Amino acid sequence: MTARTQPTCTLAAHAPRSSRSSRSSRSSRSSRSSRPAALLAALSLCGLLAPQQAQAAPADFVGTWVNSNVATNGITRINVTRSGGGPLTVQVFGRCHPNDCDWGSAPVLTYGASVSDTNHLTATAVYAKGFSNTTLVMTFTRGRLDVQALTQFTDGSGRQNYASRDAFTRYR
Picture 1 (tube, rainbow, N blue to C red):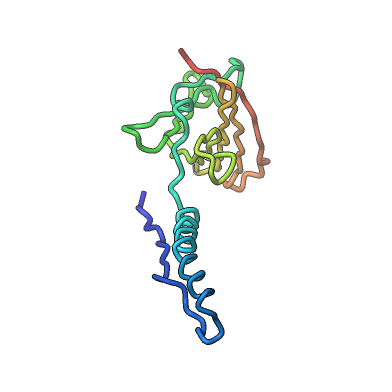
Picture 2 (tube, rainbow, N blue to C red; picture 1 turned 60 degrees about the vertical axis):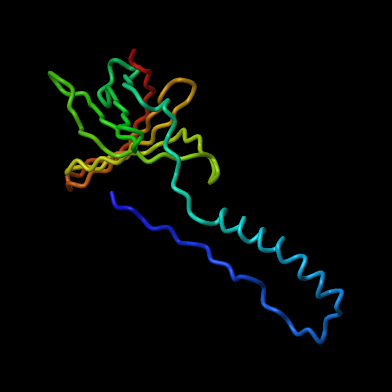
């Protein structure tokens, strides 16, 4: 993952001055006294407009999750981990015989309900498996993990893209 530099917000030291001939000394004093307030407002706006790094998902995502439908032919287990306060990673297992297939690990991107929401309860991960791409949309709700898997076939096999949805409970 590469680091991105964030744009900076720059401000003029003071607002441009208009012709003093049209101003009275009273309006000149008034504009000088409003400059600190205007500067403060501009600095506050810069803080709001400067891009912020998204907060990580809540710790509630982390853990091992098992499909509530034990007879599923799809995803059977999901492991969500975080190493040393870093980004979240997901490892998915799908139904195979005799043992479940390990899809490998993928980075997790989390989302809040708005641009200011730091309590991220939705996450995505993308798996490119060679013959297909699967996007997982995971939502943490009331102690369970709801997962929608959107699979697009890329191998020219003629198979139809499909969506599945499953509920997962935390493995204890």
